[in-house]
Image 1 (cartoon, rainbow, N blue to C red):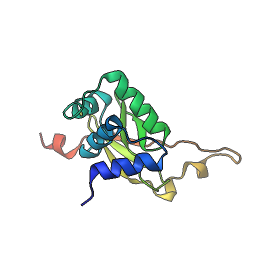
Image 2: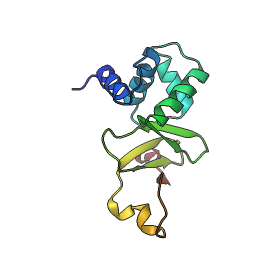
Image 3: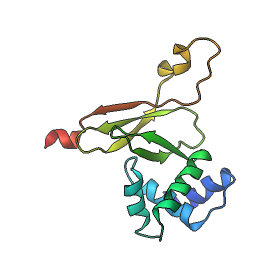
Image 4: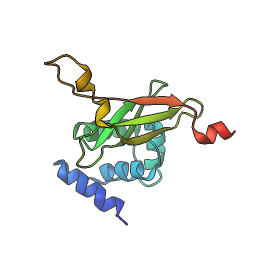
Length: 143
């Protein structure tokens, strides 16, 4: 079993960032959640172990996204969700968001058949791919 603190430190160091207690707390809280949370949910999780205000969280999230440690995805409600970027993988992954409860979950890496570059004219460079499937999750469909 992997140690979340060790993993967080390693990811930060690989990205050339200092492994500060707050950065580690954000990564640990995110890794402990089974879905891609909105900032407020992540802040609530971080605050269980670390003092942090909303501005510090947003600055930390921006830094971790810029460093390639996290990915930011738009939700159906217009709020951003965050998830860990796959370590050592460049394949984008999609998300499923429940239209009833709002929970966004990460999907496996997208197959090559969904390569956006293959759909575009020659000379175009794809810099970001975002796929979100919206529907009703299993938990909500049972209720």
